[in-house]
Figure 1: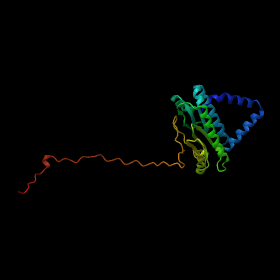
Figure 2: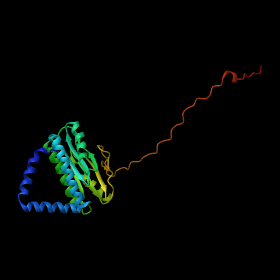
Figure 3: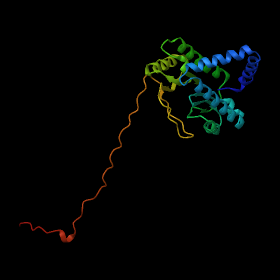
Figure 4: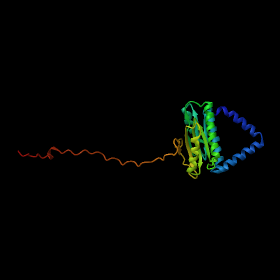
Length: 248
């Protein structure tokens, strides 16, 4: 995620919008309408916004370079981190600082360490995310408001709440069929499914990972019983051996 070139533009846009009462009212109304339609409602959306603001503040104060290259999605206290950083310590610190924000229940770390994205690569990722969101909006069997889409180097990360497995499969299929998508990773949870807190600093495994459609369920095998210790046969002592007289 290349955040730096767009920070000034976004700030200027926010200032221009804030200058007009109509812009303020429209923004609040739109935000309230979207939040009310999501699982968890307005209260959850406000909490997620506060979490996002705190984490951004922590990142910015720690290192502006890291802040510019790491992005996040927050959904009901679940924080998905994405982006590309050049320093491995930035990947570690981004996770550590995310856990400091009040209200965080999970931190999912998908930050990559490598060469920074070019403007062209970033634009392509934005196009992919936009195409997927548009397809979800037009699909009458998908409640698009409950899903978020992030794309990094052609890898699509899905997050949100699915009504059932069929809806999740539709969303994954939409993402898979989108041009230039290399992989789809889903952290979508089912409606009503409790959020299991992760250990501080740990990440969680994706609920569904794509390659071919249809995720394979993991099978846990019972541990094999321990093998009995090997006991060598007893060697009889010389006194126990009885000589056998063979016939002539």
